[in-house]
Length: 208
Image 1 (cartoon, rainbow, N blue to C red):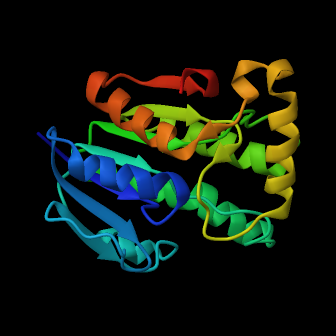
Image 2 (tube, rainbow, N blue to C red):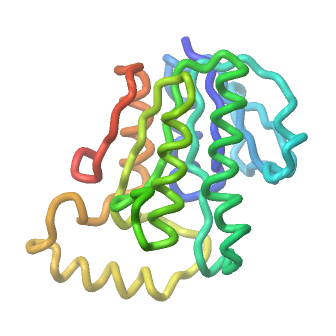
Image 3 (cartoon, rainbow, N blue to C red):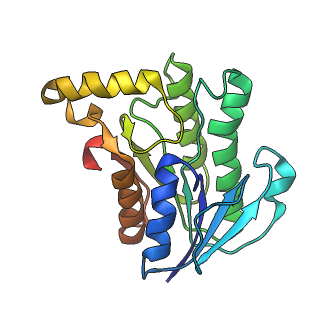
């Protein structure tokens, strides 16, 4: 039985993962770390709320075995690059350090296809830098790199809607690693892999 923590439980992938974790008979307890209370409730679920961008927030203690990181923002939500990096790079790194200090043996994090610290694309470089930072910690890391993520979003994203249509038409010609993947499938892959294998690994989109 594992005690786990999850960042991003209100997001697209995280909202599926928190339910899967609570329903798993291999999970003893689930700590959701976030800014606002979740609408979803479960006897296994507890919450630690506050400003994740504030260094002092991470002083709390709660022993865990696995930490899942599904947090991230978008250019539309966060146009300021400094704040964008603070969210997509800074928060996962803080979570990783917190996990290490609280006994975690594994981090499982959602990144992106194309992520690379050498990329000239700000978004992909930020994800790549995040991967490197987490892998520098003394803990196993599962990096999941999905392509376009499909699922029921709370907000409408015109660019993504157009992208889904185009990719749907071109699906037979798209390489497997760049075909859209369902958020629920990403969450299930994170859960399954974390319970099966404790060593570090990189999971590409076609493996989801």
